[in-house]
Image (cartoon, rainbow, N blue to C red; front, side, top):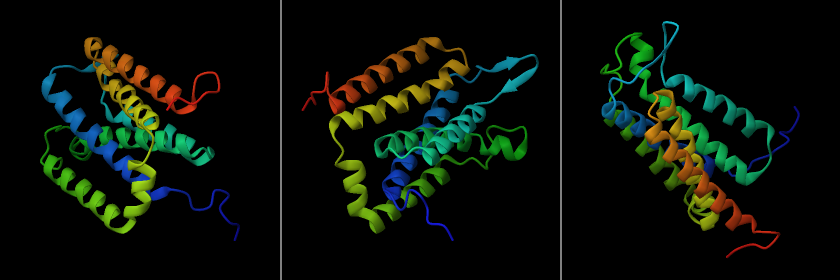
Amino acid sequence: MFPLSKGRRFEHGLSFLATLAFLGGFFGARLFHLAFPRLEIITQGIHFHHFWYGLTMMGVAGWLGIVDNDEKFARVYAVVFGVGAGFVGDEVGLLLTFDDYYSELTFEFLVAAVAFLILVALMIRYRRQILDEVFHLSRGERLTHIGVFLVGFSALSFAFGTFELGIPLVVIGAVLFTFGYTREHGIGGRKVT
C-alpha cells in the first residue's frame, strides 16, 4: 500500500468552510430564484439549470484540491466546492422529479438542519483545529475567501442574464479578493499588517 503523497492536512477546517459555503450557495440560490422566478436560460431549446454551474464548480475545485498542495488555495477550493454543492443541492427536488423545482424533496429547513448538524458535529469533534484553520485566519485571507464566494455566487446572476446583480458581485468579489491577497502577501514583497 502506497502512502498518500499529501498526508493528513487540515481537512476538518476545509469541511467546515465548504459546509458554510454550501449553506450560502443553497440559500442564496433559493433566494435568487424567489426574487427572479421568471428568469431562465434556454439555448436552442435546452434549459440550463444552475446545478450545471454547481457541478462545474465542484468538479474544478475538487480536481484542483487533489492536485494542488497549497494550504491557502485548498481553503479557496473548499469555498468554491461548497458554493457549487449548494447550487446542486438547491435543485435536488428538480433532479429527482425531473420537473418540479418546488418539490417537497427540497426542504430548506431539512437542508439547514443537516448542514447545522454537520457544523455542530465538526465543531464538537475538531473545535481546536477548526478554530486554527478557519476562525484564526488573517483578515486578508478571510477577505480572499469572501471574494471567491461572491465571484462564484455571481454565476447565478450571469446564468440568468441579471447583469445588474452579477457585475457588482464580481466587482466586489474581485476587489475583496485582491485586497485580501495583497494584504496577506504584501505589496512588492512587504506584508501589510
